Length: 130
Image (cartoon, rainbow, N blue to C red; front, side):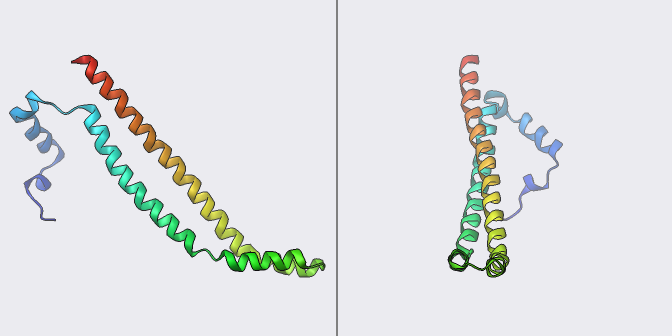
């Protein structure tokens, strides 16, 4: 993307420029517009994170873990069961990490949903003030 003059401006210069335009005084930005833009950006970021998380989940080798679990259940020897449990541990650890990451993503997703709800509240407030 080509840089333009807006990329060159400092924050203060950009604010001054926007406020000095007639459009700003006729139609100033609304809080709901700002919140909507934030929601848009965060939603796109969340979609990318979810896609990466699901791809990571597809890479987990649960077939081998299930094979080991079957051997564990079929074994009567405690020493053999312990040996199989030790082999299963890396698979279990990866699955726990995957589940924990999924939970963290769901918490983040709820925050994005709350942001959207806040947009609706702001729109109602803005309608009342007109």
